[in-house]
Length: 231
Figure 1 (cartoon, helix red, strand yellow):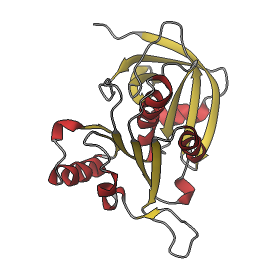
Figure 2: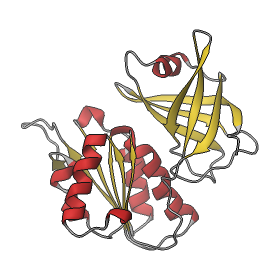
Figure 3: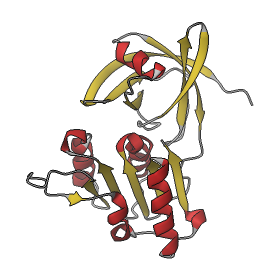
Figure 4: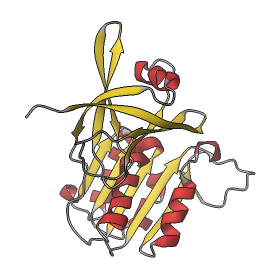
């Protein structure tokens, strides 16, 4: 089946941290997706089309599509994002990906680091807002330092609105003398406290996912119940 191509106009771009941007686009007519899926940006690079995959952080019921993009100095797509301004048009194809949750009303555990929060945030919102999932949903979100924190206001808002959703944040490089009151260390050091279910969704670096999967499987979680997406 041929992947569909679309064009979307950017309507907002916001810098969240020194190297992470949130980009919202008008949702093209006919574009449908499942929470957690990704699309491929079609970027012109010296006359050739380069495909760059970015997960969608919005949900199907939104009237926009949103992405959370980390900027790398040598990344073609990243430079493209930096130059984008309101009303610029992006070409993309998709959706793609199987990092989705199709069951109803089940307890779920989530682990994300950095921009790996993008598809997971979409899945959580979709479970709460569109599927009315009453099962316990728990998120463990890891970043390096307070400077790298983002979307905390969104997480707080969800927690205040839905009693079955909770989250914790772990800083792997929190300042010893700082005022950080959350978890300290890597997410792997805290994962066993998040065994609220035996179904996990994990998104982040390959190394983090490998370590978390090993810990979970060692502690009785079946490999088939661990869904992951590498960023």
